[in-house]
Length: 109
Length: 111
Image 1 (spheres, one colour):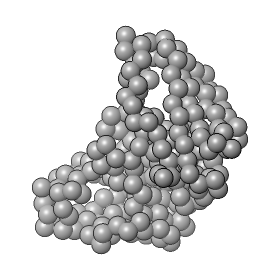
Image 2 (cartoon, each protein chain N blue to C red):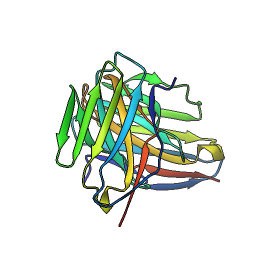
Image 3 (cartoon, one colour):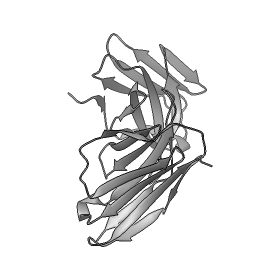
């Protein structure tokens, strides 16, 4: 089983839609989690940190389920500018961040 | 605007060349990372330096050689690379268990 698994997509949604991505992880010792956004040919940038059960920032909500070992990212009222690849990242300690393959989102008019 | 700066942004090199990638962070972090991102693959961790000591080397071929002279600078020395080494090389830094900050990457093409 991969350490971090994501559905690669693409998810094609219209503007204004709500879309959710899931990410599962295999190591129960995972300490914290992050969602990053990566635009084409650019570096990943932090979208949200998840240290406890979840986090919310405007249209974005992340939820953590430690019992089932998954993290979700919900995007409400999708914008064209949300089109990107969303990377799930698991923190296993100071020296180890494990990245998922990413889920590609395409928002269309 | 990023606190992690990578140079060069683009690099084309022959298989017999020797080149170096440079990363500099201005965030006061104590850990620095090299990642490789190939097309349609997840980021692959190559090297980790924590407090200037190498703490992880994920079975990276010896044609990649890292150097961390101080907590703000990280190099990746390249020699006799193969075409399959063509990728985006990303440097990142962090402290403790916080998020990592990435540089803009070096897009490497080996011909």
